Image (cartoon, rainbow, N blue to C red; front, side, top):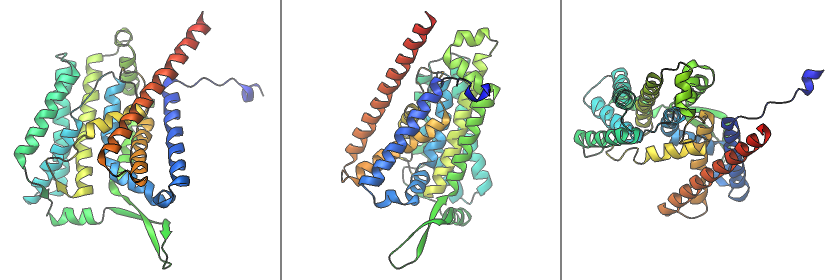
Length: 346
């Protein structure tokens, strides 16, 4: 009987910020359903958000790992763009689909290995290294082709044209009585698989715990016997790997390569991680929060467009305002919790 009334453990900072993000996303979406209606009343709206942002979700997962460890990687968008262009050109030259997947993964891993080595073992500032990586990837993308590359590979086009999974029972009925099934792309399955994998890694894996320890306090992590250099190196390797996967998912969605592909994705990924409760200082974050952070970012943009504000700067303004709101919210919530802990300890 005593176990039934056992006092609950307070939420950790990571759990609290994640819960706030999920709550705000639900409030925003319900608001859109009530006051804007239209597509927000259909399950397909959620699937459209996932279809359009599967690549962003994958990149954000990698960036969350790096940020939890106290680092940053601003090259992820450029690496994704480089992967898209490389695979598009390779396929158009008669390449094999399986080998194109290996090419995407190989490019992502190469950036992760090189940048991770420079940051972890040569102790160069992450911002400088990944800024150089961003310029290098953008430059290589332009060298490959300045013109857009539409994929003409028959096998890949067949994969692209049949990438949707139809869910009839979540569809909507049109005036003539027919039911249009909801559609979810294969890329969404890949993105959700990545989210689950990273969640399990961070929550139950020893490496995941090392990321939190390293981001929370590097000196304490060293005293606990954690190999900080190797742990930081692996965080960038995983981030690079996920950037490569993200690039191929992006190509599956668009079936075209362009020098401006994934432009600004690194900023959206950082914003998704922060909105999801990941602190830039490290040690706090959760990939589930990042997932809902990406959906929150997309939802606010769709609300702006549905409200009749179609000019692109309105989306930038609302994104900036939302990011500032969450940063301020994190500061207030964590500040109050730290004061409460200090009062209880004194």
